[in-house]
Each structure stands twice: as C-alpha cells, then as structure tokens.
Length: 288
Length: 202
Image (cartoon, rainbow over all chains, first blue to last red; front, top):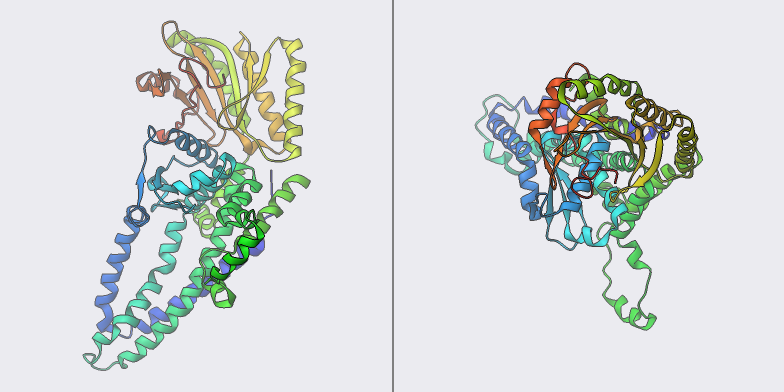
C-alpha cells in the first residue's frame, strides 16, 4: 500500500519553517542589542520548558479530561492498543473528557509520555471505524512529535508577545542602546508574522497527521466520514420540517471563522479540504 | 533519535513512513529451532496451531489479495496436510489460522502466507505471527513475531487478562540469542483471547 508522496505539502512545510527560522534569527539579532531584556528571556525560557514538560497534564486539566485505566474503558483501551501496535508506538495513556462536543487530542512531550484524550461526545457520535480513524490521527501526531515541533516553533513567538506586552517596563535604564520602543515595534512585527507562520505550520501538520492516521488504519474514508460527523455536516442534511426551519433561520449565527483572516489564522485546515485530500488517498488506494 | 528520524519528524512523515514500512518475513524461520528448544529445555510442546494476524485495507485489491492467500492455503491443505481456517476478531483484525503437528510445516506455511501479502504490496498490514505452545497444567504460551518491530516476544496469558510475567521472562531468557527478542518491554503487546484459556484467534 503506497500512496504518492505529497511533495507539495512537504515543500510548504519546509518553506514555512524556513521563513519562521529566518524571522527568528532577525528577532534574536535585534533583541541581543537590548541587554536589559535578558531577565524576560530567562524567565520565559524556564516557563516554556515547564510548559513543555507538563504539557500533557496541563492540556488534560484545561479540557477537564481524566485518565482512564483498562477496567474503566476496556474497549477503548483495546482499540488504542491495536492501533499503537500497527503504528509502532508504545501504548499511550488514555483520557476521557465529560464533554458532549465530539473532539480528540493528543499531548505529551514524547512518545513514551503521551496521552490520547477523547470526549464522551466523540465516543457517542462515531462508529467503531470512524473512532479508529480519529484515534489513529492522534497517534500520528504523537508519532510525528508534533508537541515538540510546535513548542520549539512557538517559543520565540511567545517571547515576542511578552516583549510587546511588558517591554515598556524596561525603558530608560539602558546606557548606550536604542530606545525600548524599537524592541517593542520589532517584537510586534515578529509576533504577528510568526503567529501566521505557526498557524500555517499547524495546518500542514494536520494534513500530515491525516495521512499518517489513514496509513495506520488503511481506511482513509473512515477518517473522512468521522470528520464529516464531527463537523456536523451530516447534521446539516435536514430532517426537520421546512416550516420549522424558517423560524430557526432567524437564529443562525455567521461562523466567526470566515473570510481570509479567519482562514490564515486558524490552526486546523478547513474540513472540506481535509476530506478532499483523504478522498484522493482512497482513490489512489483503489486504483493503484 | 537519529538524524534521519529527526528529519522525518521535521517533515511530519514519521507516522506515515512507519505505518507503511514493509515487513521482513525471513526472521520467521528462526521459529524452527525455537520449537525444539521450547520442548527440550522448557517442556513446552507445539500447540499444533500458529496464526497470522493482519489489519485490512479498505480496497478491492486488498480483498483480492486475501482471497489469493486463502486459495493457496486451501490448495496446500491437501498437499502438506496443514489445516487452514480464517477468523475475524472483535477488533476488526483478520487471522489466518494454521494447524499441523509438524512445527516445520507451520513455520513454512506462515512464511509463505506472509510472503504472499508482501509480494502484493501489503506487507505493512501484517501485524503479527503467533506460534502456540502447550505445557500440561498451564495455560497456553505464545511466541509473537511483531512485523512492525521485526522482533519476537513471549506472551503467556493467565486467567482473564492477566499475564504470567514470570513465565514470559523465563521464555525470554532461554530463547535469547536464538530469536531476535524485542528489548523494549513497552512493545510486548498482548493479543488477548476472547475467552480465558482460548487462543487469541478463537
């Protein structure tokens, strides 16, 4: 089972990382002129390191997810076990969040300290094959070390944000250096640009995890169908009476993530595009 | 983490590359002598069954491949006397189950079936080859060959979802050097039978 390599995706990913790297070099160059900011840099460094090491606990806590052992969720454990085996990964911890919104995420600083979390809503919404598709997508994130990649990619961006926010506290005490607003302005530009680049990188890693997940299960359609259910596309096929619909329409809210800005600032690619790419894989698999 | 691995991580293709990596069936022949050692040194006899566990692919071509493997094994049934049956477990995995009182025939037939998958381009879907052993008064014991890791590990289920770790470590220490054994115990994945005392493929 071999699919065509997605050179476009790899190229875009490398190009984005290259731009981010170049931007950070400029940023470090400018920042090194401001010796009075060294304190911020050190504190931020420690903070980021802590965040990296406790990423799993923090993510689970913020989502209200609890780690479940084998007796609490035997089926889920067995499914993850088999998928990890196929993915050539040690079995991660499993957590469940009591939310009805179907969602899943993977966290943890490396492959041996990883946790896959799912919401109750996800378990209720998806059938077994779709669930496997989503879990395999999360295992692909672990396999691709996405937590580490994104932590490294965003460290200096967070630093730039801190300088923008608190840099003014450090004005005035430098002897022969440029005024602090130069540092703040540069940081602002770096922060905005790096934010967009990081979001682009995040979207590319989602596509990569889709491919990885589909190659673990051997079933791209199942993930596509899971994405459709999660996204509520299936729910959009109406089963309500037309007359009731007319009244409901008054309450519809325009999605926030619309237009160009919404597109370049979102961390996940649009579901339609992901589904389209998975369909291509399915097609290659069938016609190979 | 080597350089190659780092580059694959940066590109985000680790998952895909490892999930589609081909299997190497030559290691399976290591079982021939292992059967003898198991009996001579540890008193474990051939349980007269071995099985190949694989995950399917959602495509017609893969279905054809499975059909082909089955046809070949059915034809072999009359020739070598190696019994053959097919099984799908609750986890959506498929099994090719072989039975023969001659370990040599089991090993060559398992290898042959694995090789057919690999030739058709589906080597990456092979999960494990499982060889069963029996010892009077105890549960079954297994040597599992993980195609994903390219290594063997012992599996001795005990009762309901418990493992006899002591027996497993014994098997490991005696067969060490004869079989390529998975060093990282995190990868000693169990293949639980559906009912206690049964085989994983029943």
